[in-house]
Length: 436
Ligand code: ACO
Image 1 (spheres, rainbow, N blue to C red):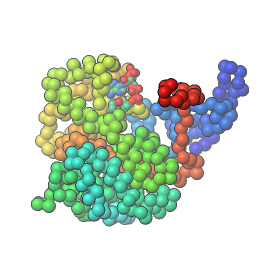
Image 2: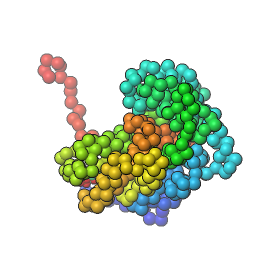
Image 3: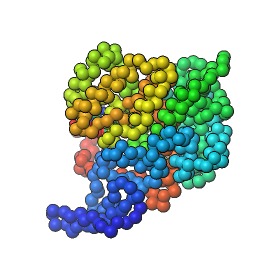
Image 4: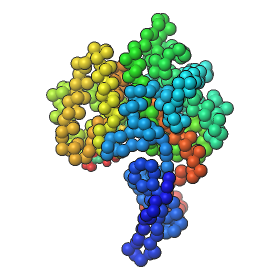
C-alpha cells in the first residue's frame, strides 16, 4: 500500500484537538484512512459493527468492484478463469500468485492428486456421528480433526508446514465431503481414483459404488469444476475473516479452516444456496409460478421476515458476475440431463424476472447472487440439498488458505482483537444471596 498525498483530518465539536490520519492507496478500489493510532491519540475507538466501512487487512488476492459487478482473482477476471482454466490451476493462482505454466500445472495437479486419501482412521471418527447429522456438522468436525492426524503440518509459523497443510486440505476436502454423503446414505466410502480430474474424482467418490464402474459425464464434470472456480475466493467475506481471525492467534491451519467451515454454514453466507433451493421447493409446493406474486408480497413485507434467498449481497450492488456464469452452466447442465422444463428452474427464472423489474429490488440494488443458480445446478447433478454448503466449503478451502498464508506473511499482522463500546452496567458490588 502507498501513502497518499492527502490526509484525513478528524475534528471534534467539543474543542478537543483535531487529529490528522494518514490515507493509503491500494492498486484499485477505495483508499483507506489509517486509524491505527487513533486510540493512542484520542482515547477513542471507531465504531463499525458488521465492518461496513472497515478494511481489516491489506490483501493482493481477490478484488471485487461491487458497483461494476467485477470479480478478479490476482487480477484475472472471473469470466476468463471460469472459461479458460480448471479449478486446480485457479488454486495455484490463488496460492502462489500466478497461473501455472504447463509443467507447473502438471506438477501441481500431481501433487494434489497424491494427497487425496485421508487417514484410514478418519472413517472411525465418522462413525461417532448420527447418520442424519448435517454434513456441515460432520465437516466442521472432520476438518478440525485433521490436525489430530497430520502433526507434521500444524505449525502455522512454519512456511513448509503451511504449504503441506494447504495441499492436504485442498486434496482431502472432496474425499471428506463425499464421505459425509456416503455415511448418510449408508453406502461404502469410495477411495479416490487418481487418474480422474479433481471434479471427476469427487463425482465418482459421491455417486460411484464398488458394484460398477462410474462414468463421469464431461458436461457435469465441467459444471462442477466451474462451481469450484466461482466459489474459490471472495476477499474478506465472513468465513474468510473468521479464518484470518482464528489463525491470527497462531492456531494450526486445520483448526482455522474448520472455523471457516463453521462460519460458512450460516444461511446469510454459504448456507444461502441450501436456503434458496428450500425456498424454491416451498414455493413449488404452494403452487409454483402462479404463487410467485404472493411470495414476493411477503418478501417486501418487512414484518414477514421472509427474504428472497439468493438475492442481495453486501458488496455487489449490481449483477453478481458469478451468477451470470452459473446461469450459463445451469442451462448446459439442464440440457445435458434433458431437464430444460425443470419446474424449479422455471420458477427461479420467474422470480428473477419479477425481482429485476420490481421497485423494491431495483431501489435497493438487489440482484441474484451466485447461490441463486448454483443450487439448481447441484440438484440436477444429483447432489442433495443439505450438501450444497459442503461443496461451497470444499471450493472455498483454497481461498481461506491463501488468505491465511497472506496474513501470516504480512509483517503488519497482529492477533485480531476488536474493541467495543460498552453499554452494560457500571461497576457494582455483589450482594449476599439473601439480599438479591
Ligand atoms: N430479500 C429481500 N430483501 C432484502 C434481501 C433479500 N434477499 N437482501 C437485502 N434486502 C433488503 C434489506 O431488508 C434492506 O432493506 P431496508 O433498506 O428497507 O432495510 C436492504 O435490502 C439492504 O439489505 P441489508 O440487509 O442491509 O444488506 P446486507 O449487506 O447487510 O446483507 C445479505 C447482504 C446478507 C447477503 C442479504 O442480501 C441477504 O440476506 N440475502 C439473502 C441471503 C443470500 O442470498 N446470501 C448469499 C450471499 S452470497 C454468498 O454468501 C455466496
